[in-house]
Image (cartoon, rainbow over all chains, first blue to last red; front, side):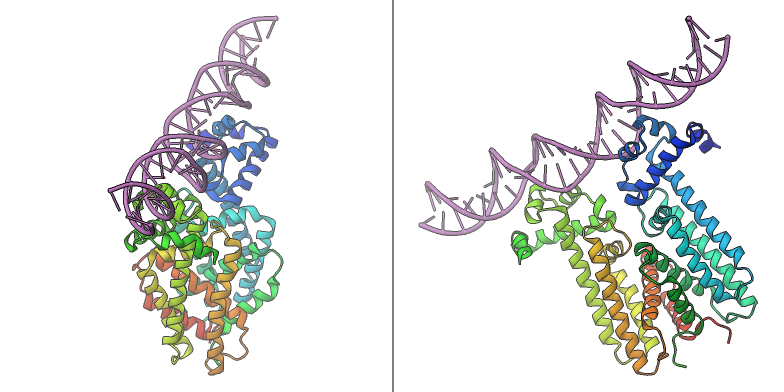
Length: 207
Length: 207
DNA sequence: ATAAATATTGACCGGGTGGTCAAATTAAGA
DNA sequence: TCTTAATTTGACCACCCGGTCAATATTTAT
């Protein structure tokens, strides 16, 4: 409601101008994080006056919230899409596909990914104290569903501690995506994903 | 060599003054990270003049490097100690003890831990581009040794892909410690560690 | 064509930054 | 004790920040 009101002026802008502003903002926040990001650089890079930017978005914080919302939307879309597309796959195949789709997402949206990762790994951003638990809950709930599917289909150990299994998968998945984001293309993603999932499946103990 | 020269003036200070300065600096960097940390707040909190601080440490960057060095020393000590103390334990017991020792370390050194985590999860700090790979190599080498021990003793699968096993353990360990740092004492560390290690050991697949 | 409403601008504000340095204070040597 | 050397100080500098707002330019309505 109120946000709509605040953004009315921005939404009335020509698509070209909107895009220039969004592009400049995404660039700035992804490269510098919230605190170090500079509104001056954003207006320079977007080619508008400072007063205009503060007219469209009243504060630096609310501009960031808006941009973060975009990033989150994109991430959610990717999660939903890959979950639907792999409904018929067995658990570990599904997990492999989810990981590889994540790598592809990062290649397609490196700057939005960066903003997402910053939210996950720093407390730099406004409301991060409230947002971080929500993000954890999001990815936790996502993995919980997929693990439960695997148990129901007798592909996973029915005595698994789901909470801890989620924790392991979430930790490794996030770290893997972070590495793939930092060192683009220098690793063989498919081989890595297969190896990691094989260990998840069989464990590490002597057989 | 050169660093020794630069720090001569600082090292000549009374222990009390040194401690006040170190304490103030550790507080500032752990709470705010490098970029947002304020030299003005450090001098206020340490009760010295601004010029003095810049006399002891020429720049903000070199003060940070010094503080970071302290944090790293402490972390290395902890790693070395727990490795030696668990030499006789079987792999998974050893892993449990390492994780719990990490939790204890964080409780004993919350501010140094915070500085260490910031280095691990942000690119906020000077030289972080070079330091981060070194840190990865450090923890990677550490885990590699311990895994190799486990294989040699026929406790771990001899066909394990060591590199990927290290990756999994490192990801989960770091994330676990980070969580334990953020939510002090609200989780049952011992129970978590046991559950996580059981999954590492046996895998997730239906049995 | 004119008036009213709207959108855009950038100079300006108070405040904080890392860093400097001449002057004042303290310590050391003769 | 007097002089010299070393240390400590904080006012000051140039710069950048997020944010404001009167003045200007542009659209819209009549």
